Length: 121
Image (tube, rainbow, N blue to C red; front, side):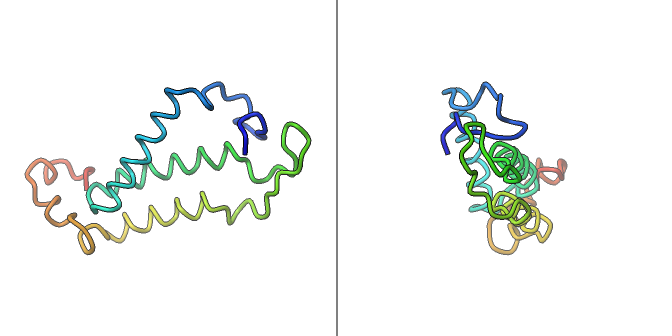
């Protein structure tokens, strides 16, 4: 989808396509991905990743039948959209403590700094 063909509440977002916004987005996705792969900081990754997925869902605005230029949006189901599914998976991985089972989360949790700051788990 091109940036000129948006619909919904993010249609007038001026940051879309700006180099600084693209860099911040990609760095955020890199951070979430590394946290998921390593199993470290899954709570923070779940919060950040869920926020990013929610904003991307708003940018695509699946409930819209037509985009701002009048073309069909090709949206099939706004509630089973992949952004929302990924957000639920992120929350489930963090809630289940998957990092301690499948990653380095157990080692991470034993670090003194992390044990004093439980939000880093």
